[in-house]
Length: 200
Image (cartoon, rainbow, N blue to C red):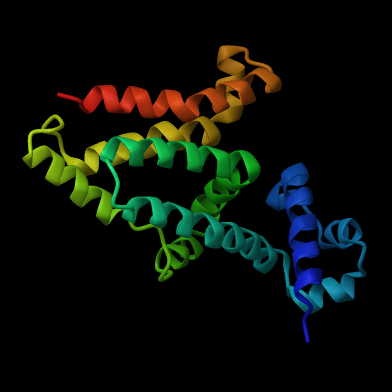
């Protein structure tokens, strides 16, 4: 019988090593040492490094997707929904900063797993948000723009500062401490800029 607390310890250790060494550079022995277990125990829970990497991603995904879907489905004012989404997403990634780079790695090296994630029953489902935007357009409450383009803009504004963090810090000469402050500010900045761009 596998113990859930041991499994979580392994996942936490894997995150630490994958962040330091990357997927290619990480070794199962290092992960076992970080988790303070022997390598045989590690292989009992996860047969290989790829399976462990996928488990880390799936664990994070299963936390993030339900949060997003709850916000998408809320019966609240569109502007308030936008504010909640940007704030909630940025908070989640700040708590799980490894996630964007891990996803990019899998997109480049294991697209089948990303397809598997996105076929999960609890995958992010923005359809309620798209329908609400369309209704607001038809009611003349916001500018007439493609709902999918608007959601794409919102996702891009929230996701790219994490995916492109290393590049952006170098280009803009921003130290880590300042960049974290900027990301915190974006929780409200993104929403207000986005709302301003669609308001009639």
